Image (cartoon, rainbow, N blue to C red; front, side, top):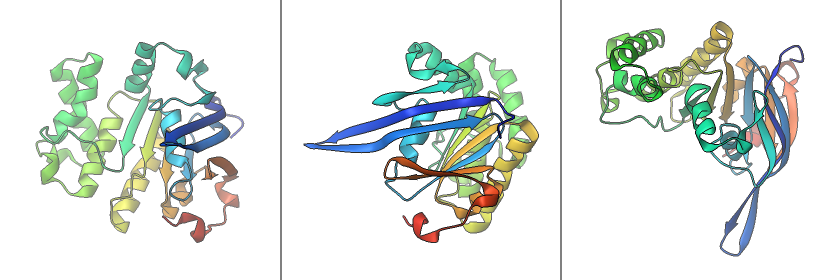
Length: 243
């Protein structure tokens, strides 16, 4: 991966929370370079800190200490409007619970980020329709989320993540609510975005099926980066994947 530019650089990232009188260290000094165009899976048991780290690199949470650079800029030294611009234009987010607007159709959900960016509704709808066609939902554009299956809702979420042509897609447990076959279809779709569009795909996941499509795997445990491995060197430890 060393021939690729670094798109996200995390250095000594820590995050602590106060729960009553107790201090909880969710992250304890994680450092990691993520390269343009790679597929990186962040794996570890529940409570390991992987989702916290995922939120940090997506500018969804602020570290207690340390730094995260996005395309060479220190995310948390930027003004809030610039951070918001990056979240809208450079990063596409996919969540386990889909986070769709339930009163909007599939087309409207996908068009929304483009409208917020400033596209006209007509242009946004045209682009949204094309993206939904690409993810296999061209026949479902007028359906509400309640009229879709879990796999279809996740495809809408992926389409929405693609709306503003991001450089990075962050997928938090994207197969967590899906059956095995549908999960494999979503993994294949994410992989195609990396290979065809050269998008950097970063997943936080328990799903060992994600290993086969990942370039590298970052194993997080007890708030620390336990190890970083290329796919060819990975040995699956099913015990480390327990919830």
